[in-house]
Image (cartoon, rainbow, N blue to C red; front, side, top):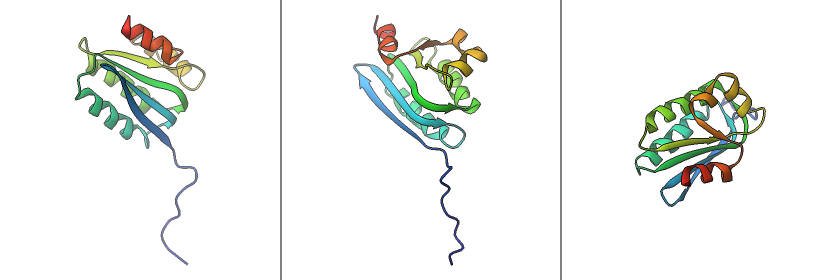
Amino acid sequence: MSSSPEPSSAASQCIISDSWRDSVVVIRCVGELDMMTVPELERQIASAMKKSPSAMIVDLSRVEFLASVGMGVLVATHDRCGSATRFVVVADGPATSRPMRLIGLTEIMSVHPTLEAAVADVTA
């Protein structure tokens, strides 16, 4: 019998990737954004910011759970982008856009229901 702990099947998972469309970076998140997975999102954002994108889109359309720490990262990124980098979020549905709307994030940042709408917004 081993004394090492078994990995938890309930551990949070989030796959985070980025892609570029000219000078626009799209950071896609799939899964759950919570205190266990947010550090990877922060790393992806920091890496993208080093390349000075004209716009950053964080696509949460496939996020199943958005914790307050995830929303905090969105606010910090919005502030970090300032006027140099346009910041837009893709969020639609009860897991993402609803909590963002309830705490007022939709009042301070641009939120779109689809990636296509977000891309159209930042390239217009």
